[in-house]
Image: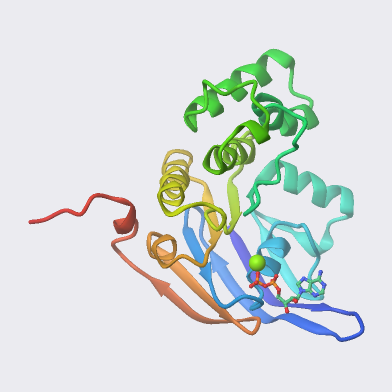
Amino acid sequence: MIHLRGISKRFEGKRTVTALERLDLDIARGEMVSIVGPSGSGKSTLLNLIGGLDRATEGEIELDGATLSRLSDDELTRVRRDKLGFIFQFFNLLPTLTCVENVALPLHLRGWPRAKIEARTKELLNLVQLGHRLDHQPDELSGGERQRVAIARALSVYPPILLADEPTGNLDTATGVEILKLIHDVHERLGATVLIVTHDANVAESCERTLRIRDGRIVEDIRRESARSSTEEPTRA
Ligand SMILES: Nc1ncnc2c1ncn2[C@@H]1O[C@H](COP(=O)(O)OP(=O)(O)O)[C@@H](O)[C@H]1O
Ligand SMILES: [Mg+2]
């Protein structure tokens, strides 16, 4: 589903920063992978490259059959719109739009008919349990509610790939657990491939696979059988 070959990213400036160095990575369709590592290790850069928000300095990224480096900017925008959903730490909602309008925006950009947009938007806001907040604006919502709107927006086109950059980083623990559950639900119900950058060990360990990044390299790639244990009730034999 996602294949990286020899990916490097350098930021040129007064001082050149090498954010990623010759990374190889394969992620299968339907995997849920957490990405951990110290601040500045290259986690967001990795997510941004996979999400087509930025271009690699070297190497190839293949995303659901498309080789990103071969795409024009317009084609890249289209891939982003059709294949990817993004969830950010600071939600990135448009402050002057209501919940409904924020979630509907990607569908308007795709030229969906009004009735279909309305139906999908309501369905998604119900899915994230915000059916009673349709006409509220972001500043009328709690942090957890804002993040739920952001998740509904990221899911609007049912993207095959969901990228989340510290989605619980700005939330209290209880709300973080709730948002994590929601992302797991979405992963299971929609079968999306999910990449989630996190500082939180519970979030990381709830995923079937964890990548550890240090100084722009993958230093550990862990797979575990009992994923999700930390979001479920403990079970005793
Ligand atoms: N737009 C940018 N311009 C210059 N340097 C950047 C830019 N984005 C990230 N970096 C640098 O790349 C490195 C990795 O950053 P980042 O991927 O944001 O780390 P993380 O998300 O793991 O905290 C850092 O040293 C950071 O300062
Ligand atoms: Mg980051």
